[in-house]
Length: 430
Image 1 (cartoon, rainbow, N blue to C red):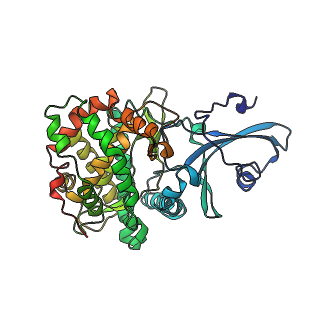
Image 2: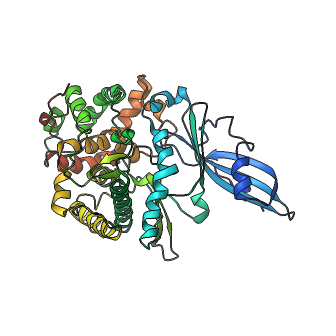
Image 3: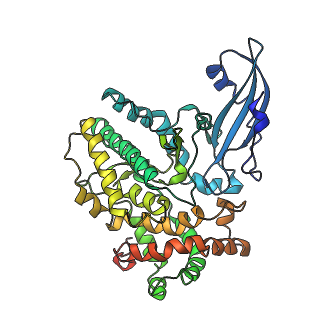
């Protein structure tokens, strides 16, 4: 019986591009299924619900095949492609996300895994990419469907428990160690890896987004139950202070331990499968569009802020850094890193440096309101960037969401008290 009869579409509002047909998948099927005769049925559906991804279209493709021996077989693949221009694709294209991810899958991720194999360890970092293509100005990826191996995302609203946090921090350390050793052996990464969420050639998008969200965010801050809420509202950055903070992300201290960071590291960008007893078996990273050369603090701040369960986020904050550092040092030694090993005290210090603070503020204002908001058909890039009254009401719903407020009443003061949200520290740089 074909698995396509069990198809579930988690986002029926997603518009599927009409060029995605069985003909497009012929090149993959010819390599992946040599004994197929013809396609019996081709069914593309959304791969994820609304609110899980905002910069691309993710599809799961079901293909029913007739095989040479007369049997039938269902294959599934994941296809990732760019947003339509009228749905935010034009703005996203300016960030150069897809060309960067293309380099990651064509060159670096293979090389990182090869480093571990040479050292005698079989460590997989990302899913297998079966096909990449640049066509008519667009870039497309076809991946193995991890769902076949029972991989799934963790509940983004609930957050990660201690077991998931430990496994993810270990995987992040493995990725970072390989990224540093590769640079040591092969020289610097291309210049487009100097930028992360802040593009050097165009910061107007971030500024426009900041101005759109400022009103609803400050209005909601008074509802979170923070003691001295007025103090935090009053210290909210001006547009000029925010711009200065954005610019500071280009500073990378060459004397510190640096690596190729994931750049957009949160729970929906990792997938796990499980042992029969419920323990995590394998964990892989996905979505390498924002990778940036810089301090591991970038990923650590983003990940802990956005993905740790609320009952352990602050309680285990320092412990999380130590868990990551221990695995990082272990992997650097394994891969024969030639420079001095990073010290734990220095890693802690990097979390509070001005050039890394953007990743806290951006997480709190851009990602976290969306992550803890229940799935909604309007949770998409196009809706959030609109200047309409409906869009403003959506932004207010996001930041006044009680789940979000319950997190922020403790999290915002936590970072404020460490100077991370002190915007008077920034002087505008021309």
